[in-house]
Image (tube, rainbow, N blue to C red; front, side, top):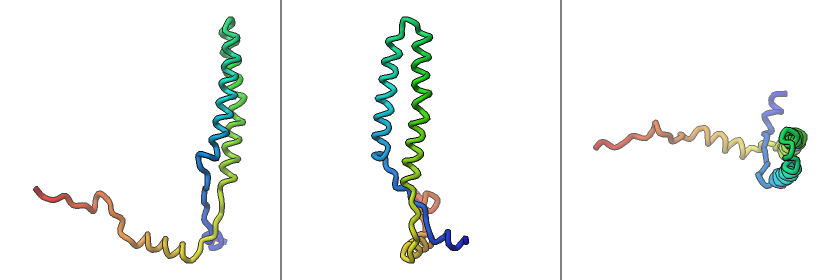
Length: 106
């Protein structure tokens, strides 16, 4: 069972463009809600409650859209022999880092 899992790798293909429209629509809804609450400024408590209610009611829909979009962009790709060779070469090659560099003496 464990060997079958090692034959696949998880890849996330999500980009900012995939969620850009969702953010824009949510901002439009939020600003319309804030504009509606501004019209109620003769009663500030009511205006604050309407603005908060709109924010609280729209946030779960935004999070649901983000999560479903993310889950739709996660793929399981089979690992090929060439992928395994590349992974071995990258593990075997020395990794340059700040500790391996020596400063010249002055």
